[in-house]
Image (tube, rainbow, N blue to C red; front, side, top):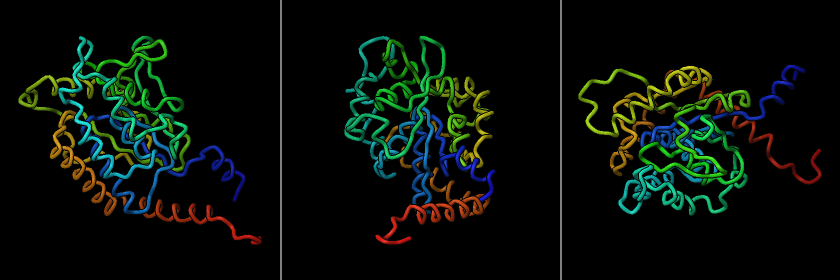
Length: 291
């Protein structure tokens, strides 16, 4: 290997990075992507995510299978009456949602994960993006997904945190320089919407987030080699939380991933599969006495 190759390897320690945007219920499409990659024997080595994407990333980094991720969102029932807040800062109590994470992350730390994870939240007190990659995992996930108006803000470390989608909804920039290859799934394409689309508060909130973060997202979406935007995701809502709706979005993400990697992305996928096999070979333990 040339000196340039050695230095490149050192400066980019991870073979494959994965970035997962926010999107609420739309993030079930990302579970579909992970399921397809799993079937192909391709695993990311580092993940960055925001809001729902951060939750998906954390579940994956903790070793949970895609079917467990889907079941988590189905069984959590975030908009259940049991989770209602009794203050004016949000409809749903983020503290009650935090307790839903405990069985999935019993050690509650980034350090306990099998892979590195970078989670974005927004610090309301300082009006800036905050990136978590150590310490309490559950606090970070709750902060990152505290959608304003829907979930109560998270008070932590003398600051007030809300959804990371406000400042960076597609945080590919956090890991791009660390990865030799990079893929992501982005779920908030800024396409025209007919007037009749806006029928309730949820539709308006979802649209506001798309518009507000579009400038930074436009720059970040071009960083990965592959940034997937599933066909039809623009017709889905972040608040489609009924079990049948969640499963439909999962299927949408899986089928789109399959179609992409069997066509335009076939060469990229083959490259990843080949390099994954090589990396496993290099990690094989040597037999006693082997030179």
